[in-house]
Length: 113
Image (cartoon, rainbow, N blue to C red; front, side, top):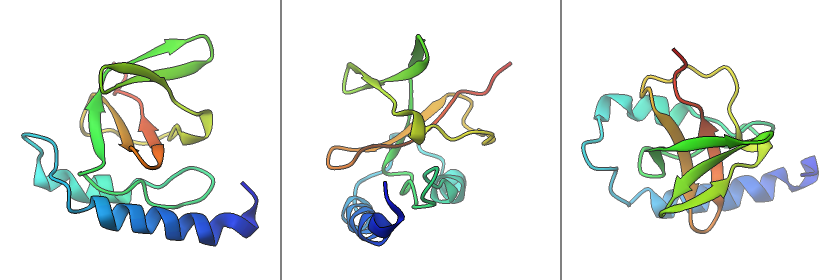
């Protein structure tokens, strides 16, 4: 995305997050992890991945040179520019931040053993 479009993208993401922020967090969500979720930023833009209400632990797999995550019982390709690199993951499982309107905003791999 061209840098000239970043302000518009930030506004759209902000509105989506503000709208979706009213959504309930996942069942059994740990409120102590909310700052970690809120600190996740999209690669290349620095736009927030949103909040605990938009991010979920998920199953994932690799297929060739990309990741796929399970969203609504369907395997969905993670765009390479949405994979967060070198992010500590206190959840342990893979995490995808996603909304129906914006699609995948961020993906954090599971903690590697």
